[in-house]
Image 1 (cartoon, rainbow, N blue to C red):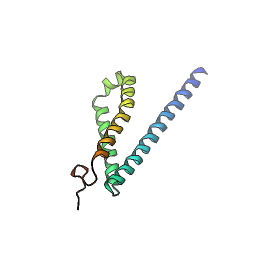
Image 2: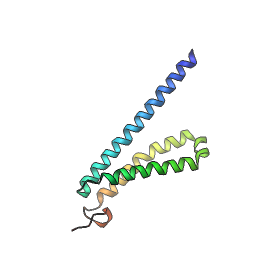
Image 3: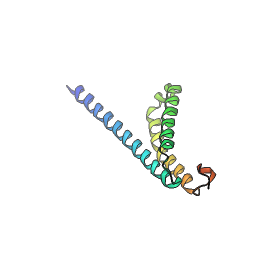
Image 4: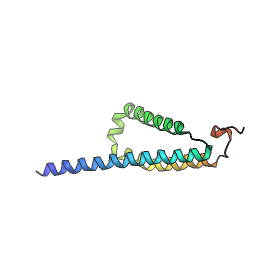
Length: 111
């Protein structure tokens, strides 16, 4: 009886974590799409979606390649990834937004 309660609690926690991860991923994708649209003065949804899919594919390759070492230190890896995500998001946004509109670095040439 007690094990069923623990299993239900673990299942609820896993569902909540999956929901939060999906929500944050989609929210960041929408936010990045808005920033790219404003900065490049165009609707580059394909760029944002392609980069998101590239990130998912790369993480799948990393997880399949180094599965055993990552599973051995799972809690540390999760904490590190959770800490580096906002740092990488802020740093990449800062670099992207610091470039002038229409510069060659942004991929848009001045016509």
